[in-house]
Image (cartoon, rainbow, N blue to C red):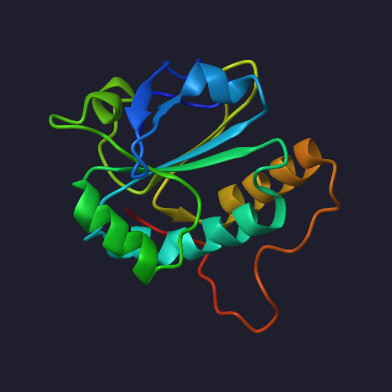
Amino acid sequence: MTNVSPGKNAPAFSLPGLDGEKYSLAEALKKGPVVAAFFKITCPICQFTFPFLERVYETYGDSKATFWGISQDDARDTSYFCKEFGVKFPALIDEDGYPVSNQYGLTNVPTVLLIGPDGKAIVSTTGFDKAALEKINAEVARSSGKPEQPLFLPGEIVPDYKPG
């Protein structure tokens, strides 16, 4: 759960990335929407969700939408997670005490938000939520100007929801 529900402003933040760069929500929103996915490396639902987020990123990311994984773990463990689960979009580190996670009122991970260029949440979901991920896929496709591609492949067994 998060206190940033659809239609509410997402608090501004800046966090360091695994690459040593500093990432700012305000700067990223100038380009377009931001998908911010909070996670812990030991969370099985995060491990299940992130490959689907990577699929959306590989299809539409870096055109106008920004994708960030926001880790509640250290840089070394986060790097291993990204390699193991094929995550190529930037991973940011929510530093000691989880200031950004707390600012967003997180109680569980994964928590995934799609934040519009106006700074308001469009999608806000906790756990694995198939319908919310499909909405993120559609919104990111729309903002990129690319035709929407199916997120889930024929024959994939994908539950509607898994709590985080």
